[in-house]
Length: 269
Image (tube, rainbow, N blue to C red):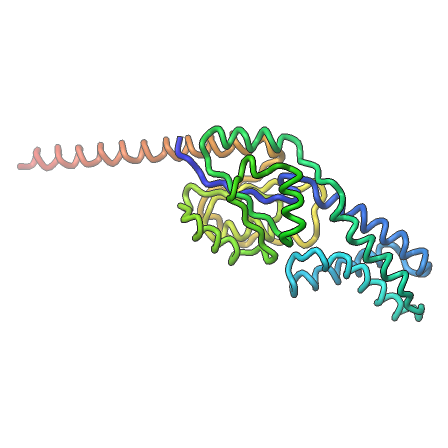
């Protein structure tokens, strides 16, 4: 079997992430409706999301931007309603925002089994995760992911096509034998398709609006949608077998055409 380079995303591909952010955002919105009883939870959550996405576009996937989106939302509604800003309120919101980075990380079912199966098959596994170094390293350590990825770990605050391109150059990857596995259309799948490598999309349990974009890039190689992490090894191995069979058939057909041409030429001599 031809060995592959397989890059995995971390958050919501190998371990749960959005569920904890949504939990803390819910706590934030509940508190805000106490301070601003004329504003709905939906309005608060929408404004927080808007501020958070603006910050990502400017600063990348840093941890600080999330608590600051709570503070920014608070400032916005203070200005809108005329409420006096309170320093203790602001500090409370910052602490609440940082709470999400202290929650023990939980692996998605079959994470270890999937990675172990691919490792034993001889494939080279890489981790490409978005976020700041400290928080992502915390998760990597808790999940003991170096067991599978060793030093082949890349952390990008701006996780995009440029970041993926740099990684592919660093590992000198053959696009035909390279895969990106992830839940984010924006930061995993579109960059993979733009770099003409194979892609596997596994939709998250709860998706973040930031990750949802329209895929307008025409795939040059395999582009699969799976519904479970444990489907990945079989899907990749099936693709390898189909590719090998196609190449063998093509070579055989080319040989037969050549022989037929030679026979034809001899006939007319």
